[in-house]
Length: 325
Image 1 (cartoon, rainbow, N blue to C red):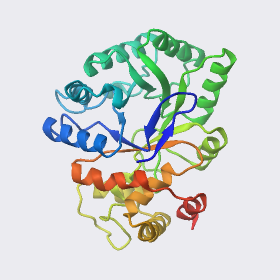
Image 2: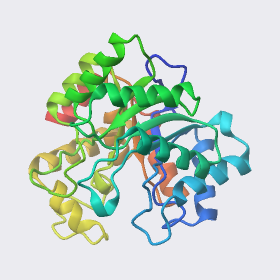
Image 3: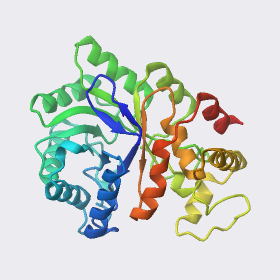
Image 4: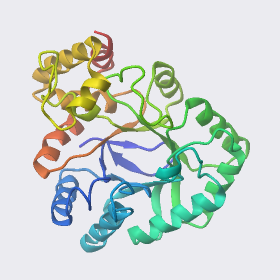
């Protein structure tokens, strides 16, 4: 497993991050613990969860954080893992109402720490943005969290690069540190236009990619596997895929340019002896700036196959070829 150093920190994180959203609800505790063990044994150390996770499951809100906390406590391995969680997400029944006030951010953080049974987390992401809230106010809240030693570092999720640039300028003007990067939707497959869905999420585009290449800001990429588009169940020759998520994948990713990227990923996979899915993940983790691809795997067997991407290093030329041919 390869690792990257988060800029201006002493944190080295695995280039494959394990997303903990379905664990404790869709994936039971014994299976989750086994999967977490496999991830750690094979070199992974970067766990990603959130305050809002499983709020969509009756009685499940917060269980992913609680389960991860129980595993860390039972295995006594806090010093071996990097824990990241997110807060400041709108309530699901009022997505139009921002929750980035100081009281809301700090309340979410305190609740997450209680669930995780931890005094602090390594990285705290703000899960959404509110362009009407002054950057200075948000930055001051995060500094309070750092000063109280409840978080070590912070980042932003689903923020535009314009707002990230503004945040960094504000911190620099005050000679403040702690910012580590951005969490954004990103995969080798480009989402179709007008897909719809949650308008508060942000996905990588050419301008944002250029900004990260120029600035060197770390990216934690969610939806990095494009809902399984590169895993073998999809393609131009499979117009009606059978997986449960098939309709969503067709709607979001079925287009000729993505099929061509899938073809190239298969071809490059033959060169490296790995799957097309691993190549798609390696595309993210082989950029000129540090990046980690967040994956979600239901079984240890599938996870082991996915983690091969963590040992695959592509050249800049190969990354450009995957993208553009």
